[in-house]
Image (cartoon, rainbow, N blue to C red):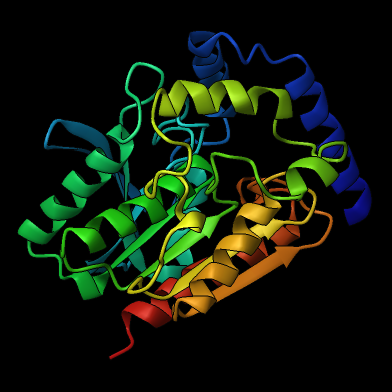
Amino acid sequence: MLGLRLFFIKKMLRRVKDNADYKNIPRARKGFEHYVARFNQPLKGFTYAPFEAAGITGEWITPDGANDKQVLLYFHGGGYATGSHLTHRSLVSQIVKSSGTKALVIDYRLAPEHKYPAPIEDAAKVYEWLLQNQYAPSQIAFGGDSAGGGVTFGTLLYLRDQNIPLPKCAIGLSPWLDMTQSGHSHTNRRQIEPMLTVEALPLWIENYIGDADPKSPYCSPIFHSLSGLPPVYIQVGDEEVLLDDSVLFAAKAKEDGVAVQLDIFDNHFHVFNGFWKVLPKAREANKKLGEYIKAQLNRA
């Protein structure tokens, strides 16, 4: 039964992506927001409150009984061009439900209007705002999915290079970490990829990086030293074209002395975590993410 459910979800995803107009960014944004809206209504057991600081908006998500001094600063996915705190409310709620922390999901500036490194700049601004408002680095976790995973690790490298104290840990859900598409999975997973519109990636990369070097450190971290980063936990599906972004990053992180954990989920797809209402593996994965954050933030 569970295998059949997964099969039909993948079939539905392929139908959606085949009909997507990925060249029309305004339509893609509206479509994403509309498609996931009914799955991202406020959930019982959580408090949701607007955030605005440093010219950046977002949303606080606080599960009942959360540690008010601990926070997951989360960066949503969406190809650097779509998505918002509204598209990721449900997913992030499930992660912090198990972490016992609050979350702050920010609406960083989107491409192509705002190119690299705009999201990195926005993420760094909000992180520094947290530090200025009595949140200790040791009580902050970073996290993000897909492009938001790219923001997560790009921002960590930027903060490290600026000698700003880093958060205690970071999580990545199918993070997009290579703007050159050098991994073998971009070829050998192309036909089975159920979620991402593979043909759209070159265009969305161009929309995001513009004239910047695609190997720039804060958009393609796998090509640069990762030394000094905090502990990292990454989850990825084995059917996605971005699989090697995670595999190569984890190998480089380990080589550079970073405590890294990588979980590859068989038969699962890009950011499957968002389908927690219907996929048991998604619920399991989100719980593991939350428990990882909780263990790291409560570690002396």
